[in-house]
Length: 162
Image (cartoon, rainbow, N blue to C red; front, side):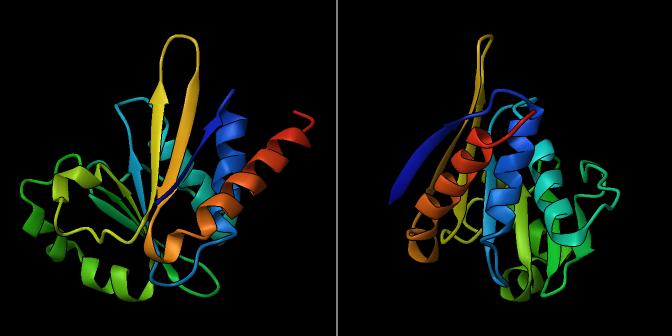
């Protein structure tokens, strides 16, 4: 497993990480967005979606559990599983289609452990009083891409004029 950590100094840094992740996504990819309430999971998902689908409105799927968006090469499925009652309920949301042909961004993936593919990019967001960070890790088809995403995100941070 390849793992790297990126400091996220502000919301713009989170958006740049989202654009770096988006640049490496292809149909069938799963991104597990992990972390406590307020860590930035939805902010990161919005950045990824907007990088792929353009300037679209991206509401939080907290109550709908899933929202979909059209990108040029695939559909994006944004899941928020916080309110999911049992892992098997994921299939009622169309997850099979998402996992086969789309890109799946999954907030609170641990709520459907066993149903969410293990071959995923894991973005573990953390926040404390002094800092925010994202730890990226991946196996399988993500093993080689984690370093590329991290390098791209760090380059975007270094060249930013914000």
